[in-house]
Image (cartoon, rainbow over the protein chains, first blue to last red):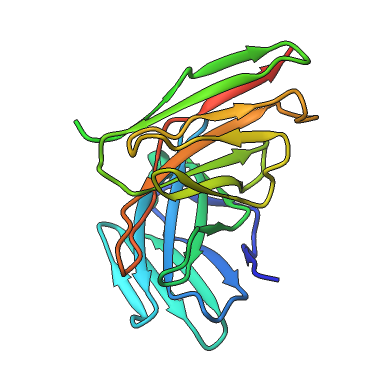
Length: 112
Length: 114
């Protein structure tokens, strides 16, 4: 069946280091991907998205990489800060698809 | 400010009662969604609506009901048939365009059965 999953449920990094959060998806028809950040007790916030006609997209301190060959998505956070501590979800959607499919999430902990 | 608003933030329900969670958006989005999140888990789709007066079941619709009488509003009723309703409920909306766009989320309602 369709699924979006994450390789690591938890990730701890030192403040100032770079973080990489991974996501695997199984539906080759997916053509739109989003990363969300969720802080405790709050709704998910959009971080960055990428369409399947791209391999890489950069935002402020964040980069999303898409490898369609192996159905893999990653989120890179540069110079990780304490405020980056949260759960990160990847989500996928098919163009003209009706809903989003979310992965289980990775908890990022930033160590002082 | 444009956004999506869920209310109440916290809700307590006695067993056997129905409760309704509110979700309102002023983003002029066509599509709206309800997700359930359990502790340490991802988001599971309950119901979604692509247009007014139409909605579809998601993966875990049993024990829930929705309505979409207005574009701005997509209330979720948790019925007494839902055996384990204690969870964090998230409402989202997205523009209905040819190319996909992101979903915007509300701040959630935490429902507890007492």
